[in-house]
Image 1 (tube, rainbow, N blue to C red):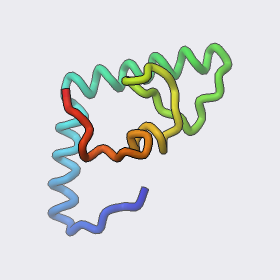
Image 2 (cartoon, one colour):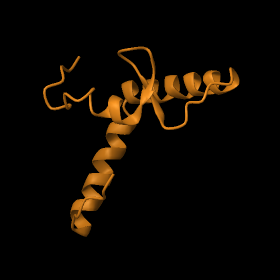
Image 3 (cartoon, rainbow, N blue to C red):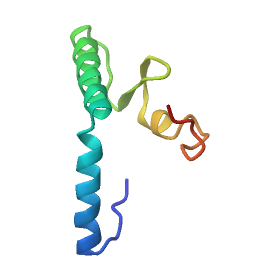
Amino acid sequence: MRKQKLSKKAAKDKAKRDKAFAMTPSRRAKKAENQRKRRAATKKGRNIKGKDYDHKKKKFVTVKKNRGNYGKGTKKEKRR
């Protein structure tokens, strides 16, 4: 992914927002779940390199598919 071209102030503000979002209870729970899933998959001998856990499909899929919402983009994705 390409780095955004931001001014120093904008980059600092964005880092603050990103950190606040990453520390929300739902994001922390997802990160913890991802760690558990990845460790378990590695222990079973599965090759998960270059893959992310998809919380909707409940399995590991490529980063490209998962973050791009399977070609549909994430702009119109329903929020819970």
